[in-house]
Length: 387
Ligand SMILES: Cc1ncc(COP(=O)(O)O)c(C=O)c1O
Image (tube, rainbow, N blue to C red):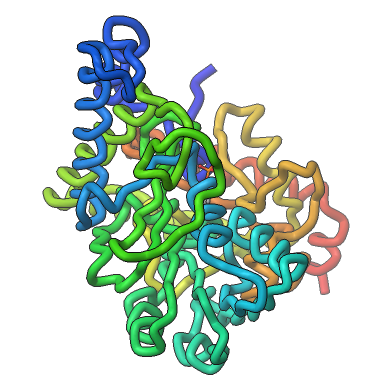
């Protein structure tokens, strides 16, 4: 069956160049990067080259990069590495669960959290962040790009507020890295998380930018890896893959190679909105990463559409994490005051470097057909139309 994958915010395929760069580090260059002999020196050099590449992508020094097992660990290290009993934290209602559930754990450590709301476009108001600050606020953690809608938050303004108040600012840039230019100095953040598998590197590797001078308590104790900020033998092949993916992403951003992706995304939106009634874009009007669109199809159960399209060869997602198997409407869309029924009728299309115009046309054809068929079967939709 011809299969098209438009779920790149869930994970991306490893690019052939990335796989090629990683391959020798499974067998030929297998040394432990902490060993002082030839084998160790070889892998140590590869890890440090990868660190340079990630630092170049983010505009920081190599020594400010800590490799982790992914975005979740980077987010956890940023939050639990910094926050202590009695501290107050400011976050938002639309964070990924890696941040949201970490914040939910904080009260049990004697910390308080304020969740600033978003407007109907999914944007945090920097003034709301300012108003939420207290004398004991230790950390602001607000994401750069939302994984469900692709909406880019005003992180530079939030960074200025944090700087003026002398408060640490962490941003989860897992869905922004490789899709928009990132310069940690311009963002004004002290901590920033990225994840390999959202940018065509393998799953199970990520990194946390830790601004020089930021004192983090490690979460893992063991050897003095990663300057004692994250113990454990480095996952060398994956780190090499992340470094290569960072290099490729930086070059693509410099060459403006993401505009065709944004055009394909815009084409999907225009065509769906023109051809299918009672549809719309969640997050319309807000700045967004170029690869993501979140569209509602009134009268449809998003999960049913995902399954129907999968049977025809198109992989998309409802956007909301469904690891629990629960069919709860997305907390992100609810926070944007999208009614629960419409939130359940929303699906996310997320493109990757491998996506093509032909795939977009194939997907559009399938979506139009599947929505038509599901709506024919929907008594509530048909009743609403007849009213
Ligand atoms: C915004 C955001 N943060 C964090 C994560 C978690 O990253 P990882 O899967 O590498 O643990 C994800 C993954 O979906 C994400 O989209």
